[in-house]
Amino acid sequence: MNATLVSTVSPHFSSSALGKFTIIVGGTILLTISAKVQVPFWPVPMTMQTFVVLVMAMACGPVIGGNVMAVYLVEGALGFPVFSGTPERASGLVYLMGPTGGYLAGMLFASLVCGWLSICGWGRSALTTLLAMLIGTFIIFLSGYLWLAMSIGPMKAWTFGVVPFLLSESLKIGLAALLLPVSWSLVGQVKNRRS
Image (cartoon, rainbow, N blue to C red):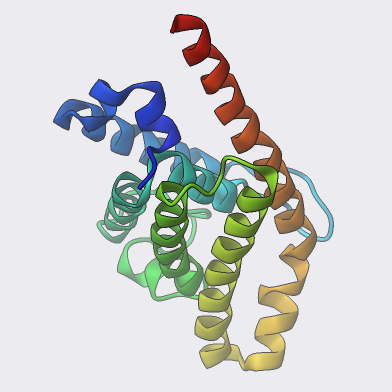
């Protein structure tokens, strides 16, 4: 198994209890911000939440990445206004059972899968990052689509729950395929200078 980007940058901090706690709390704050901030985009405004979920999992691995997402979901279930549209819309378990609940569950599964791929060495090249991000995004949208289809039907779920996001997700996947390999390259250069 390979090291993650975070464990390569700071092996002692990321393996300590304090380090893990700090990364998880910081990760949930970052997820909350990414859910709340909307970037003007066509055909619908874009958040960076799926990007943050998947890149964090690829950078931290399945244990920390999965825990970040799990803690975030628990915070939301307890009624903290961490999700997009809360507290204006319903919060807590009501929100989780609503139309976006499937996407949120998919983010947890995707973070575990992408985190596992990262410790298998994916994410160091543009190609493996691209493939990992495609897999993670597919998991998120399949889960969201299936959940949404149960309440509004398969055609409407596809039209309103998938199609409007294809362009923005493609952009985020491309951005991650650039960002992660460049980060690995920079870390490698720094380590080579020190040795």
